[in-house]
Length: 279
Image (cartoon, rainbow, N blue to C red; front, side, top):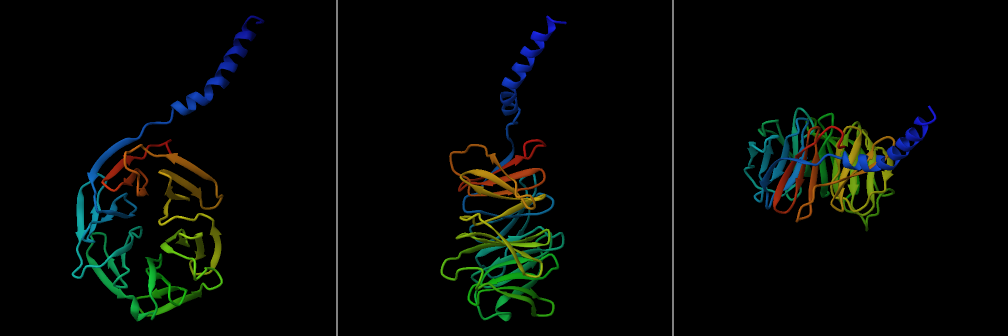
C-alpha cells in the first residue's frame, strides 16, 4: 500500500500538469463544408434552416442552401441599394432599400408578398428597418430621431419613441436593427447596442462600439472583431471568444447557424461545419 501511494501522487501531479495541454489539444480543427467565389457579394442574413442570403454586385438577393447551391434569386424590377435583410421569420423575409426608402417583403422562395413605401409613414429619412415578430416593421427615423413600429396592413404607426435623450444627434451611426426573443437590438457604431422591449421602450445599453452587424444564436449574441468570433450571453452577459480559421484575407462578415458557420472575405465565402463541443 505504501509503495502505491507515491505512484498515485505522481500520476495525479502529471494529470494536473498535462490537463491544460490536453484541453488545448482537444479543440477540434475546423471542417470546411464548401467554398465559393464571392467577390462583390455581401452576407445579409441566415434563416432557421441555416440557409444564407447574400446580395450580389447588382443588388440581387441570393438564397444559398447548406450545400452551397443557389436555390432562389430575387431580382427587383427597380434596383436599389440593399441595406438590411431579415430572414429569421418562418413566414416572410424583409429587404430594406435605404436609397429607395422601401421595404420589400418576400416569402421563403423569394417571391414578392408586398412592398412598403416608408415615406407614407414619416417625412424623415429611415436609416434602419427590420421585421418585427408580429409582422410589423421597426424603423429608425434619423430626421425626427424616433424609433417607430408601423403596421403596413393598417398604414399607421402603432408605437413611437423619441430618442433625443438616449442618442447623441451629432455622434451616432445606426447600422443595424433586429428583433430577437422579444427584444429589439439597435446597433450604434459610435457607442454600442441599445436594447428595447417589443413596444419600443428602452431597457439597457451594451457597451460594444465599432460594430456594424449583430447576430444571434441560442441565448447568445455574436459579432466579428479582430478576425475573431465573440459571443455574449443575453441574460448572464458572460462572454467568450472563438478563434476563426486563418485566411490570407481578413473576414468581413460572419453568420452562425445551428450546424454551419459562414465566413465572408472580399474574395470568397467559406462555410464550415459547426461541430458539437467547438462552440
